[in-house]
Image 1 (tube, rainbow, N blue to C red):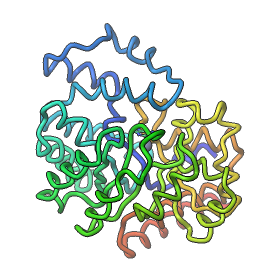
Image 2 (image 1 turned 90 degrees about the horizontal axis):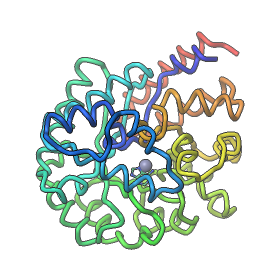
Image 3 (image 1 turned 180 degrees about the horizontal axis):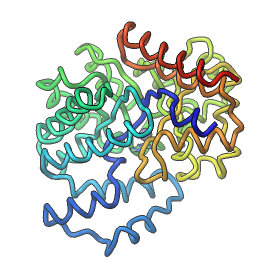
Image 4 (image 1 turned 60 degrees about the vertical axis):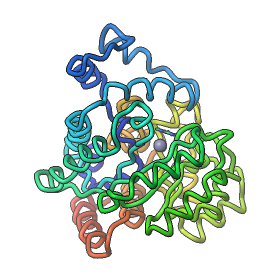
Length: 336
Ligand code: ADE
Ligand code: ZN
C-alpha cells in the first residue's frame, strides 16, 4: 500500500503557495531580506504551529508571508513546492495565490505573479509538472478591495486561470463577493471558493448559486444538509478536501473521524489536497497516506480519488486522458 500511494499519479487542486513556506525557507528569506522574525529558531517556528481554529492559523500564516519581498523569493517558494510535487508523483497542480497579502504590504502584484509564473514554467519544462494559477480574494477584506485586485490582475490574465475565495470564512459569506465573481466570469475566469470548511452549508449553496463556482474548496460541512448532499452528488461538484488541514484546524478532532469516506460513499466527487502543507504537517502524499491509514481506504478508493481530481482539474480533454491513462497503468501494476 505504501508503494501504491507513493507512486499514484496525483493531481493537487487546493494548495496555497504561501502555505508551502517551510520554516527553513522563512528563515533564509528573512536573513536575505533583513526582516525580523518573532522566532529564534526553526524549531520555535514549528512549535508555534498549534492552532485551535482557522483564524488562529491565519494570524500566523499572514505574519510568515512578510518575508516574501522579491520576485526571486516568490520563485524560490514556488520551486520548493514543485520539488515536493516531484517527490510525491504530483503530475498536475492548481495553485492558489493571495495577492492582497502582498500588495497590502507594498509588494507589487507584478513581483508576486512574475516569480510564481517563472517557477511554474520551469516546473513544466524541467519536471514535467503542469499547473494552473488561481487568484484568491481575501474574504476578510472588502468586496471593493477584491474588485480592485481583479482589475490589477487583468494585464496578467494569460497567467491566471481562475479566481477563488479564501481567508476567514465565518461572517464573510460568498454573497459579499457576488459582483466581483460576476465581473471575473465576464472576463472569462472560472471560479472556485472555500466554503463549508468552518462555515455552514448555506455558504456552499451561496458559492454554487451566487458565485457559480466549478468546485468547492473543503465543503466538508455539506454533510449537515441532506438536500445539499444530493445536489453535490447529482451535479458531481468536486470537493477539494484537505484532511490534515481539517485536523490541524480542529474541524475534526481525529483523522479517524473525518467524513471523507462517507462523502465518497454518498457519491460525491471527492479529491484530496494539502492546503497549507508547511503548516499542517504534510504534502499531498502524506495526506493520502495518513487518510488511507485512518479510514482504511483501499486501492479502489485511491484510484477514485485520483481520477476525481483529474476530472475536476482545469485541463483540456487530451491532458485529462493522458493522466487517466497513467492512473490506468498504475492500477495495472497494483491489481487488488
Ligand atoms: N488560506 C490559506 N489556507 C486557508 C484555509 N484553510 N481556509 C481559508 N483560507 C485559507
Ligand atoms: Zn485552503
